[in-house]
Image 1 (cartoon, rainbow over the protein chains, first blue to last red):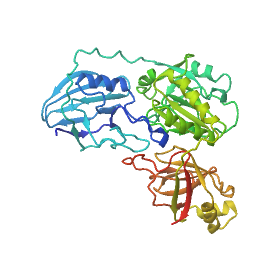
Image 2: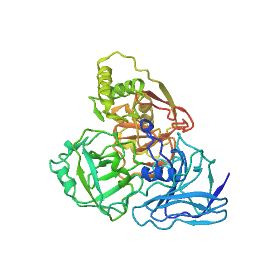
Image 3: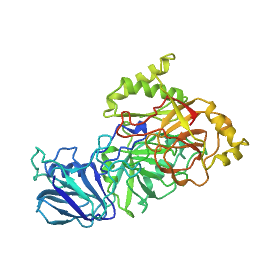
Image 4: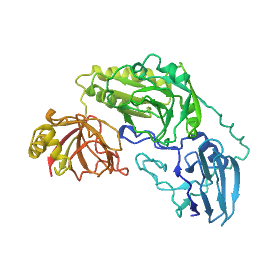
Length: 278
Length: 190
């Protein structure tokens, strides 16, 4: 099996595929690439199955040595269409210019033992492979049947100040009547202490209507959970499956890839979507 | 969609019905008094609501629940503190903890962690003011009216009263979690 040596892992690089949805009822987060569009794009560029695993780098990409020729693509926060890395060559992914997560897809996929049907690293539950360390050796999976799709257009550039669409609820009635307006008015800034579990936001405090304590209930990625500080946390893929802070609104699934690319310090806005609930 | 129910018994009944009869749902996640349904298509809404109503009407529908006997050694570092908080002796805390039957209200927090309802009200103690960074796997604990077992080493804010060798979570097993919402649990002395 062909291999990749991790010369430098970068601040946080993990193996990610489409995650392990369907196990929340036993406390297992969905996990998976937080920018699934970028992952899917990368897998198409190198001709992989949609279920293949890639590397998800955070802010600064890894430095990797390939022991055999490989077809590679970079998507997400960095973009480079399919290119060949020769045996013994070193790939320096480099810093993310826009967004925060870059995907390194390799033809054949990153081969690690699946856990509950997924190769994703879940940083909350510590399921799946641990984050990459300098000196790790990764295996590349078998040659897939698919053809590389080099003609794909690069995805549109990430917006400077993204607007995420939010469905109100399920607990909007636990907040002051003006809380949704305050959410839309913003402005919001991404806190430094954001990760794959959630994006912490700083802005106008979202006030609760009462002092009641909510009993724990199920959560989804995209939920805007509001702790007593009034500063919401936008839950991402490694989110806890249940929680006791009320959820003011839920970001539409289609906008979650954008949420997964929010940089610390970046500004963003919310728009209320009054369509039907997902 | 988040369904709000009257109590945990209703939540478990609805969750079990939906898991059994609505396999097209991506997940059915009970909470203390809620059921979260995760679906692929909006068109599933009506069917979910119909099944939920039917589950609530069927008062005597047999809920197939397993009973688990979990062996416990009452050697937790907070056993004496719990005794002080409750005005009982450590021996009485252990005895009362074993005397009740518990119901698995829901799972969450970490894979395989069940929030156990019921139990002696004298043992309903608050969570610790400062959560611990590390609680060992198999620790039996009390917090906020619940009892629970930490399946794996993790942070934790509950009062630690004992330990068990029971395997609460094994991702290679099907189902991976020992406990399922609605199951019964009894603690027995190891």
